[in-house]
Image (cartoon, rainbow, N blue to C red):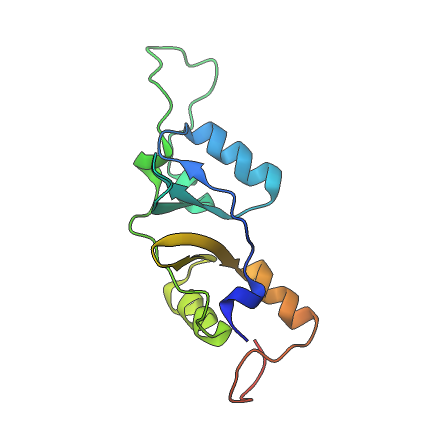
Length: 140
């Protein structure tokens, strides 16, 4: 089974200049753990995760002493992102996710973002009891 068979496409992305609160609202409202970050030309430049956004300063509303502008996604994202290709085996994608301790991998073909594979996508395979290792060595 290939990444293209399980990836989510089209991908919801965020802009480099998006304020962190807006990105956090997008992730939480959609139930995402991460979103690919694209530049003005639509090119993948990073990924922003819940963990990245947790690093943003949390200041109480009542603390109004010289309030600074909200940080942007560009300031908090992971760059460069770990990526894979649509033709890569899902077992390889899972291995990279586990080894790197990441929850989402953008899928890129010919330099273009074409999808994303998340742990949730892989869990759907497990729930359907689909074997994802081509050698028959087990289930994810």
